[in-house]
Image (cartoon, rainbow, N blue to C red; front, side, top):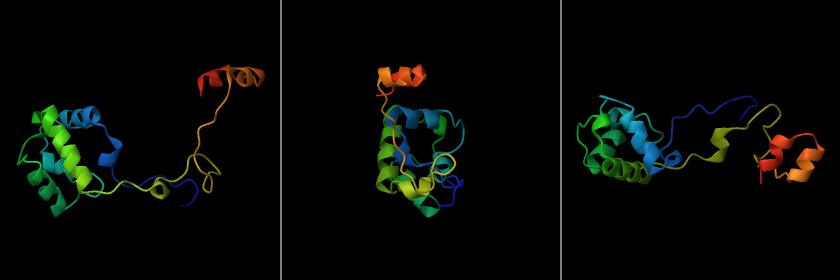
Length: 123
């Protein structure tokens, strides 16, 4: 992936937990469930209709989905899609194209010594 290039794919059902997934659907109002499913990575075209049918949701509006139905839909969309591979996500910041992302570990003492006390809570 070229430096500075950002992820161009669709949102993945693998990026949501059950409460977030339910909130996504609730916020989508009167749109049909199938329309939103078709916007998820790996769930486009005819597969969207198959996913909605397997979840037993027919032509339901997104805002009408119960929490239980959203959980079932999340399970079915995951069963029918693959996780997004890290290589598709790209890198963060300039010069990061060949580096792995990592979380910096900084002790409160070393952070204070470097004049960056805001980093003290990162463990």
